[in-house]
Image (cartoon, rainbow, N blue to C red; front, side, top):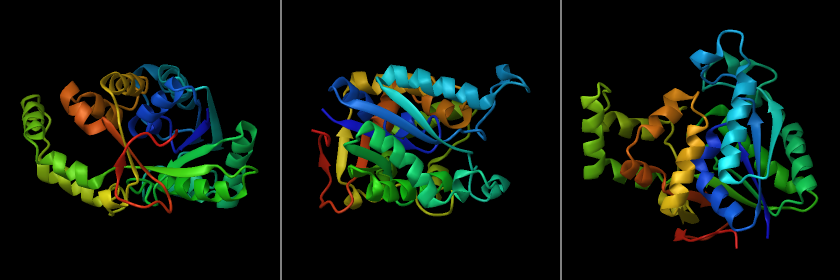
Length: 277
C-alpha cells in the first residue's frame, strides 16, 4: 500500500476537489495525509462564533471532522496565512502564502513528505483550478517539493474538467435545477454561470480542457455521499460549500461525482480508472 499526501490551499478545498479519491484510497488501505498550506483565516465567520471566537481553530476543527469522515490518517499545516482572493489587500501580507518564498514553502512540505516516506503527492494544476493566488502557489510548491524530497514521490495534480462543466450547463437537469433555485428566490442563469467558468478568479478559465486531463475517477454513489458529508463538516463556509450542498442529490452527483487528475508528462486521452494501484 502507498502513502498519498494531498496538498490543499485552504480547509474545505479538500472536500470539493479530492474527497472522493481520498475516501477510496483510505478504503483501499492506503495511508492518506492531508496538508493545508494556509489557515483559512479569511474565510467566512459563522454567526455563532461571535466576534471574539477563533476562526482559525474553528476551521481546523471542521477539517478534522471532514478527515474523520474520509478516513484521513493525519492532517498537517504549512503555517501560512490565507492570501484572500485576487486583488485583495491580504495579498500583500508578508506572512500569506501568496508572498511566501517557493523554496522555503517547499522545504516545509518536503519535511512532511520525508517523514511520511510519501509515494504520491497530489497538488493542483498550473492555474490552481480557478486562479486563486493560494491555489497557484500550491501548484508551484508541490512541483518544487518533489524535486527535493529524499524519496521523490510521484506527482499528480487535481483539476476540473472545463468541457464537462460547460456541457453540464446544457443538460435538462441543470435547467430544472436553476428553475428550482429561481422559485426559491436565488437568481442564477446559465449565461452568468458559463461566464464564471470562463473567467475564474483572475479572468482566466476555470479548470482545463478534457484533452489535458490524464485520469477521471468516477465515484460510486456511497463515496459521493461520503464526499457530501465531508463537505457538510465545513458548514461555516456558506457562500461556496453552502451553495454546493444546496444541490439536490442528482445534480450533486453529476457535478461532484467525478474527480480529475493531471499526470505531468502523461499521455492522453483521458482515461477513466483508479490511478493509485
